[in-house]
Image 1 (cartoon, one colour):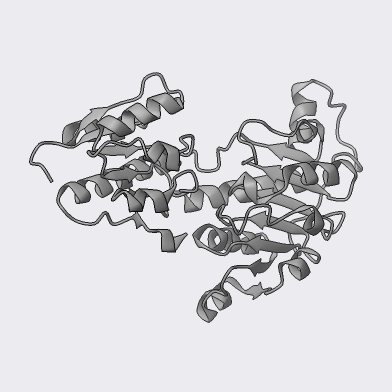
Image 2 (cartoon, rainbow, N blue to C red):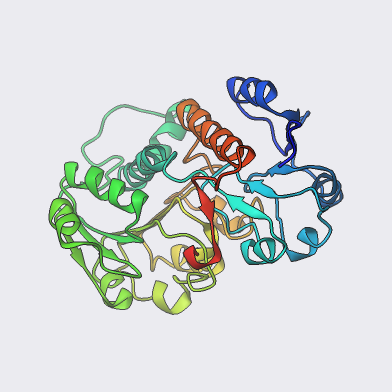
Amino acid sequence: MPATRLNVIVTRRLPESVETRMKELFDVELRDPDTPMSREELAAALRRCDVLVPTITDQIDAGLIAQAGDRLKLIANYGSGIDHIDVATARQRGILVSNTPGTVTDDTADMTLALMLSVTRRIPEGLAEMQAGNWQGWSPMAHLGGRMGGRRLGILGMGRIGQAVARRARAFGCQVHYHNRKRVRPEVEADLEATYWESLDQMIARMDIISVNCPHTPSTFHLLNARRLKLLKPTAVIINTSRGEVIDENALARGLKAGEIGGAGLDVYEHGTEINPTLRSLPNVVLLPHMGSATVEGRIEMGEKVIINIKTFADGHRPPDQVVPGML
């Protein structure tokens, strides 16, 4: 590596403390205003920097990577999910990719439980009634939701976040079940008091709540497709704080509208900001703007991991959070 400071381009605004530290260590181009870069802007950035720091709003596909300059040696992603980056093509070009795993585990798990409570206890409906000034006083039969305790929770994806969701759900008295690509270690299963289901179909047909906590990969695209959604109990609730592409959003909307699914709490969507309009209109659906990881603490920790990855690389070592295609 050259003795001169690395040129680093950041595609979105980050917490002030993170940007300040980056400016101390590297030659940094910061993004202002805080809007996603166009494809042309991304291509230009890839041609002139040593390190690119993108976020989930940046699609770094094979076509863009092909336009990268010889200087580009590291894509230090700000976030743990890397399905927006063609890691295999980057590797072929000799470009390393890193991410920030573990920084948003608790924040995302907290939001998952918040959505479970919001849907099962009908919190948004009560909030809307109060904000509209329509509340006429307490009634024994008004705003009846369901109790969390005793419900069967099926977790789809028992990684860091799935396990954090399981611990929280147990505190609410839920029975924890899960389906995963590989069964977790017996001691983890025992600690979580979790029941493993090899068959996803059999699990979701028996659950009261399904929580999607797996990444988006080719094998998980539409994992909850129209056929599987029809297996759900009509009172079942779906929560998704992972990736929208895991669920067939149109099929989900149809099932909710037809009363075949009890409710949904969504923080992510199959087509980004283009959300199925049916979902917006249903009272038993809670929609959030991808804010599961949005805490000050989490955002700063993500930035600190990015800096460590870049600094380690600048010192001639492998970034601690390097991603390789075999991990995906």
